[in-house]
Amino acid sequence: IDLQSGFHSTTAAHLACKYGHHACLKLLLDAKASPRPVGGGEVVGGVAPPGAQSPLVMAVQSDSAECVRLLVAAHADLEEKSRDDAVANQMTALCNAAAYGKVHGARALLDLKAQANFSGDGVTPLMLATHKCHPAVVELLDVLHQLGSVTLARGEVGSRSTYSKVLVLPHWCGRKQH
Image (cartoon, rainbow, N blue to C red):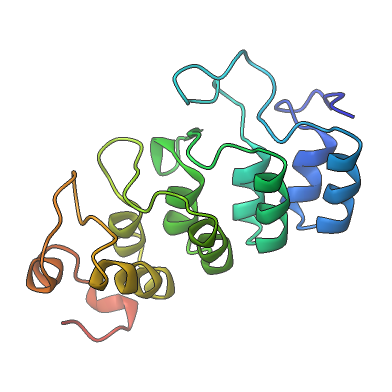
């Protein structure tokens, strides 16, 4: 089941997640496919090895909430960091969803209790969604912020006015600023 294709340590589970094929993923997981990243070495300190994307990150990138749920039910690590050179060195699946505007993936991760304050290198999912101009994800995380569940930056909880000063969407995002 986890026979690697030779291309960036991609397994059948990775491909099912990449294309959002949750029925295929369920069959693979039922046959004991691994929900964890493979190739390049072991996960050390919660960080996947270079070149190893986890199936969970691929499920988020395809915005497949059902694949996310299946992987977490199969014990995928919600807080495991994957390397993403396009955005940051290390990101959790929720950071990845925020950076790429994947609302369904972000909502599924939050429903499954992913840490909304967890980041790779001091940048929270809310900061990534704001910086990358993804208003729908910003609004999802902003609701949590208003409930006191989301940290704004580097471990400091701020007031709504602090949020307005620090995390205002750029004018080209088409969202009314606070």
